Image 1: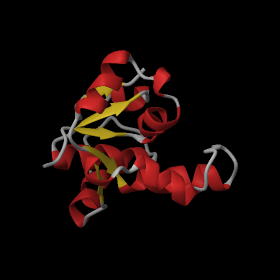
Image 2: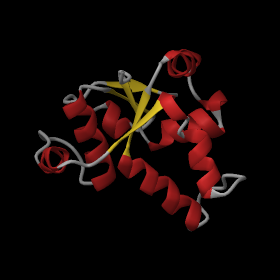
Image 3: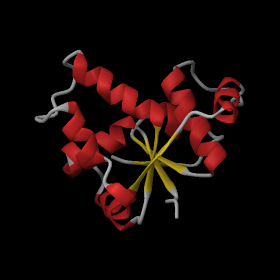
Image 4: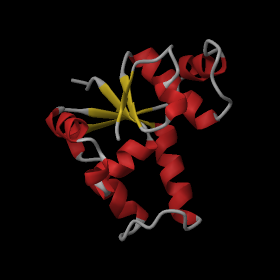
Length: 133
């Protein structure tokens, strides 16, 4: 069973590092979902931020992934050929950031709502989104 929501990078980090930053309704929604989804580009974004020192996790990156990707509650959605193509053909207007384009394309093709604090995604009319903050 898959969840109905895809957490973008900031929402995923907030959910596991600073849940108080999430709107109470969103925190409850994430906790009540049997499964939440993450685009695989999100893993790369977190790893990169941690490795360059822009993100302090308090534990090793390997351990953080174990904690933040709880067994049967999380599903990492890989970049497929369809997602790659969709990310390059998103209806205008949308910005050029490749990670955001992949997150939006993943949500569109899997028919998921993106939970995000990113106004570029929240304002994009061609994907369902929900403000995390």
